[in-house]
Structures are given as C-alpha cells and as structure tokens.
Image (cartoon, rainbow over all chains, first blue to last red; front, side, top):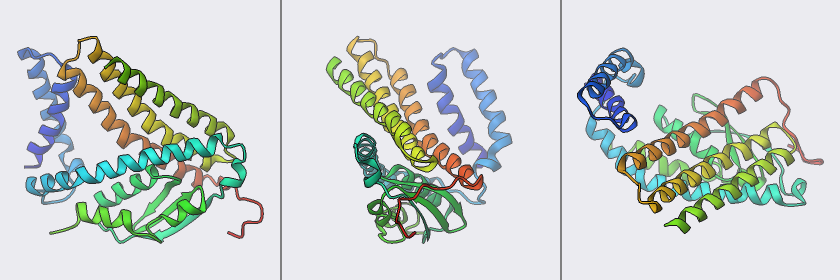
Amino acid sequence: MKFTSAFIILFLPWLILSGKYTPSYIGMGVICAAMVAWWCKELLFPDEDISIGKCIKQLIRFIPYACWLFWQIILSNIHVLKVALSPRMNELISPKMVRFNTDVTEEMSKFVLANSITLTPGTVTVRVEGRRFLVHALTKKAASGLPGESDEMERRIINVFEKDY
Amino acid sequence: MEYIAYILIVVGLIFFLGTSIGLLRFPDFYTRMHAAGKGDTLSTVLILAGCIFAVASEGELSWLLTMKILLIITFVFIGSPTATHAMMDVGERAGAKPWKKKGDSK
C-alpha cells in the first residue's frame, strides 16, 4: 500500500519531466521509481495507516483553501510593495515577535498553517515547537490577524484536514 | 495571448522590484526576510505563468510543457515559504536582534 502510493507519486513526475515515451526511458523510470519508493516509503508515510479515500477527500477540500490562500498571497505582495516603496517606511512598520498556541494537532495541518502564515500579509513563521508557534509580524495590524487573536485561518485548516475522522 | 503574457511578466517584474527595494530598505534581518520570502513566490509564479502564455502565442504549446511549468510552480509554492521559515529560525537561534520602533514597549 505504502509502496504503491510512493511509486505513483514518484513515477508521475518522471513521466512529466522526461517527456520521452520509448520503452527504454519508461523502463528506467519504473526501475528508479520502484527503488526510491522501496527505500523511502517509511519516510514519505510515517503513519501506519493511510487511506486513499482520506487523501482524495483532503485534496478536494484543499482546493477552495488554496484559492483563498492565493488571494491572500496577492494581498501580501501588494502590502510588501506598498511598505517598501513608501517614503515614511519607518513609521508604517512596527515589527514584533508573537507567540501563540494553536488548536491544530496533525503534522500536515501544522505544516500548512506555518506556510500559510508565512504567505499571508505581514507575518512570517519563525519556529514551531509542538503546538507553540513563534511568528514575526511586520505591523500591529498583521499581528492582530494571527491565530492567537483571530481564528479564521485555523478554522479553515481544521475544515480541510481534521474534520470527519 | 501575447498581451496576457506581457502583462503577467511585467506585473511579476514589478513585484520583484518591490521585493528588491524592500530587501535594501528594511531595517533588520527579519523584516528583510518578509520582503524576500513573499515577493519571490508570487512574482516567480506570475513570470512562469507568463511563460506558458508566451509559448502558447507562438503556437508551440504542448501539454507536457504546461505540466512541467505547473510542476515548477507547485515546488516554488511549497519551497519558498519553507526556505524563508528555515532562515528565520536559524537567524533567531543565532541571536539576530529584531529591530524595534523607538518608544515601543514590547
């Protein structure tokens, strides 16, 4: 089960990246993907039980979240551009470190939460230890949008990864 | 098609410019990483998407090329915030002092 999933994950990019579909190239791809999948399956899937159904469910629920995240990324870039080009930059920014505890528990959702914080306007994740997050915020307004004070992002992630099972 | 490509690439370059200026103007390590980590992601994605349209306008677009570029976009999306995060973490461990506004209590 683990081997099959790892093999598929490795072999599809091979097909896309090689772009040559003669038997020798595909054969090489099969051999390489099988070898790496055999050695690294425990690394890719440390949990005991993985189910394809769960993965597909998460993937489908991830799509609206990804769209929301993309919008946040555009906002955050405009924010950085505005602050960087403003002549009174030192008055606009007031950086500070923020610590908070999160409600999400699974490794995958913590990873997504950390990366989402980094990509949304004015905040970057510095460290994750267990459930404690250390975040650097560029402005006071950015700090007030963090999961410690407003839980919109956390709620969305819990909806995607931790509901129904 | 051609114009969509131009617009995407130019907007991507504007964001890259903002990133570079931010990188030079911000006061300390952490705020500079803000500029670098965010500007990178979106502008790379925009320029790569522009490349898809640029190739399409010449009539040489294949699904293989599109898939390759989309694969690069996916990896940039995962990789860029992770790299930013790694550098912030190391900076904090190495003891880089965050810049504070004068008169800020915290």
